[in-house]
Image (tube, rainbow, N blue to C red; front, side):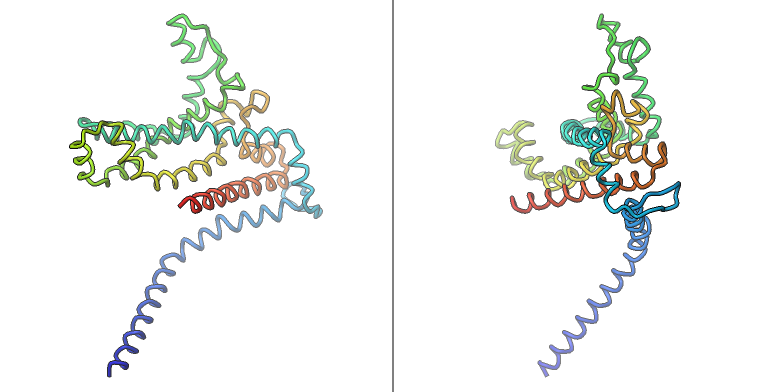
Length: 302
């Protein structure tokens, strides 16, 4: 009898798990279909297109990896490739750290916490193109730029700002940070809010100040969240297009051109779709490699 009951229970459990798996797959099915249609199909089509020459949208001759060889030798690609890693560098310094600092400061605020949360999120709801145009006017070189007008009030000579190759990428990253830091800081604040109040009380009893609380309580608590947002931050850099396109047109002298902008130029300015497709494939491959390396490094440390 006991064996019969045990076998029946196992069979019931298997049936239950199968039903749960089936329900899970049914829930995921629409997402998988959309993902396949809007991600994998365009990616596979881009790979195919990158292996041909084309006249307009009509494929002509199979050339294998010739388009990739031409792409890697082109000076615009070399500039865009270098700039992309500069974007990543400044994004980690500015775009990654600012939301953490904002989240910590607001979480440690006693009064008007809700007001500050709404305030930091406000730039996120501003249309992206409006943000780009606004900061473009702000950093405009010469006497008509808003920042130069403000600096002239304290006797500082007008600066070239976006026309200075050393400043273009940091200023574009600053624009992106102003736009996106608020929403990211809310994610960190949600993580901080889940920290047990007992830890804060124990730290207060031990005489810990704000910096000790941040170092020994907040940072360890949001570390896993920060690791996830870090790789998402790096991946988002490869999608930078409109900021350099509108603010600097990739200049001066390709100082701010990104890989995504290079793809745009090939496809919609030069109408060279195979080269645009080859560049888009490279844009897909690099984040995959970086994500894999990052995952391996973090797993090894754990």
